[in-house]
Image 1 (cartoon, rainbow, N blue to C red):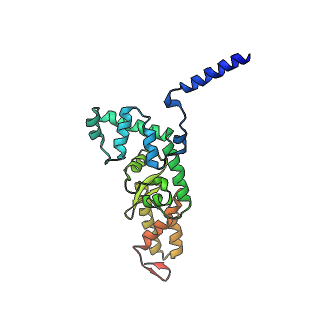
Image 2: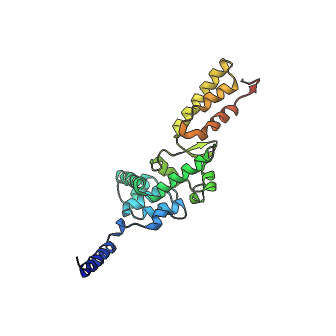
Image 3: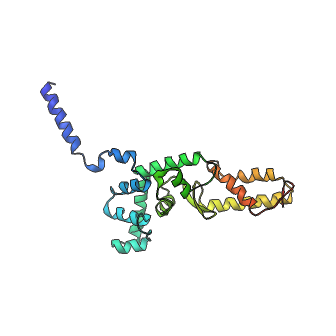
Amino acid sequence: IGKKSIKHLTEALKRSIEEIPSQYSVDLDSQEGRSTFYEQLLFDIVEFKQNARETIKMRLGMSDPPMSLNAIAKIVGLTRERIRQLDNQAAEKLTLYSAAIKTAITRIDTVRSKHDYPISLRILEEKDAWFRGVKDNKSPIQHLCKKGCLGKYQIIEIDSRQVITKVSEDEWKEILGLSEVILDEGMKANTSVGQIELSVKALAPEDCRELRSELWNSILANSIIEDDLIV
């Protein structure tokens, strides 16, 4: 191939790259992440088709209170079932392709790994400024957790705090119930406080170690300790 042919080939390749549709191009800013979680999330949603984009924005409650499927259906002019499908499709797309979602999971992992206590949305925001806004507007991150967009992460209420962890509300209630059973059995058997504490803390899953102290504290809050026994 001569120099002239190489030059023509290079120019043709350059033109073809420039003509690639925007939805297939790589946005470096998107890859690196916007200044906050919600800003990056909005940026990712912009690429969705109009109905899906409007549906997920209204379901998330990014700027206004989150809306029900019925309310969105009336606004968009589609059936409730179609809105439900669009909501699910948008959530799946965010899970698979959103830079905001991937970054959020990594950053939450990092914050949790550095502390041995439950991470509330307030603490998450304090420890990582990228999550600025989640404390005052928890609706978007709650909806994403319910849809499974953030992996195993769920937001549950513990002592009036919105905590992000890897157990669901129902699983947490079940664990609390089992801890009460252990307490009752320990009291009947005159089991030492130390033994009961170990048994209770062992109820928390391995990837929810930060909940162990919370479980134990919930028992202590409703118990009286005398001579190394819970009575």
